[in-house]
Image 1 (cartoon, protein in one colour):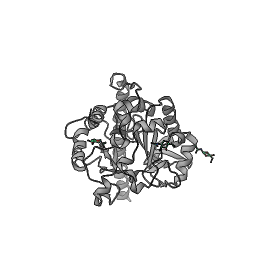
Image 2 (cartoon, rainbow, N blue to C red; image 1 turned 60 degrees about the horizontal axis):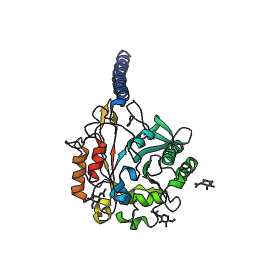
Image 3 (tube, rainbow, N blue to C red; image 1 turned 180 degrees about the horizontal axis):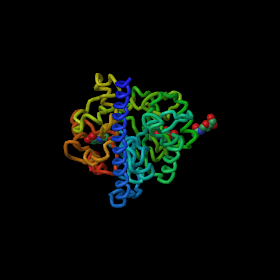
Image 4 (tube, rainbow, N blue to C red; image 1 turned 90 degrees about the vertical axis):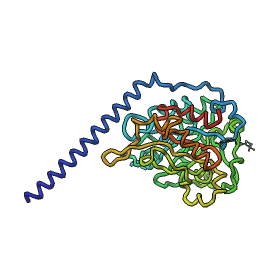
Length: 333
Ligand SMILES: *[C@@H]1O[C@H](CO)[C@@H](O)[C@H](O)[C@H]1NC(C)=O
Ligand SMILES: *[C@@H]1O[C@H](CO)[C@@H](O)[C@H](O)[C@H]1NC(C)=O
Ligand SMILES: *[C@@H]1O[C@H](CO)[C@@H](O)[C@H](O)[C@H]1NC(C)=O
């Protein structure tokens, strides 16, 4: 009995110290987040002049597939907590020049399609419908801009649930539909930004799992049009790999891969008390152009391997570093 209770005590002590560590970590992380928020006024985030074509006249005549967009990873997870990947909200991201938003979806405890981080107890950033409404309102106010959204379907929900959320938000009239067999779709099949603007179909939507374009044609299957580099936020700060990681098996068909855009996963996590969280402290390093972790270094490696630039580079805390400089350079400016 004695030994047993001592054992229990040791466990309790260990648990308390692990919890203490976590609390301290969350506190430090939140403090860094608050400092980020307080210094916002002095950072380079500014509203872009609305010249149309996503900020570059040249893009009006460039195909969608020939433009590199910096994309915000977990765009709606905004705040100072460890599970937040962004410092500023969606309208501010768009105003600053972000035109590609990635977000996770899960079903919340009330059964609603929500923006949750891994699960809805950890972080619930609200309903997908409300997220789409915010983007729709931004498109209303900015009639010459083209926005891409990529949703993940963590709970493998039916496409009808996504259709419902899109419908309720009122965003469907803005959606572009890639008409034609996805298997025969090539980089050349994409319209220019000017054509998208002319038709006022300025929202391009992708879903990673569960898209059914015959039923809901405006929600495109991400992996029919893109592939992704490995997702190694923890282990590889030099982002050494540009391999075709997803969809599984595509790497064996390089001629098919060449007809798709690709997404470069370019963000770092850190681990504390066994929990993986975005690396806020070091965000400027991967978001710089050069250096071993830089966007340019990573993307140039991928261009060398695959012959064309990525369609999107996914980052955390885009307000740190020089992501728009990287976007310009990758687009040839
Ligand atoms: C939304 O759903 C309603 C009811 O099914 C339908 O009548 C309406 O046309 C839909 N709206 C859009 C934009 O798809
Ligand atoms: C624009 O709309 C017209 C008429 O519906 C259609 O034929 C054309 O393919 C559309 N263009 C694009 C880029 O979607
Ligand atoms: C766009 O086309 C140019 C010229 O072919 C190429 O160098 C560049 O990598 C392309 N960008 C993308 C995103 O495909």
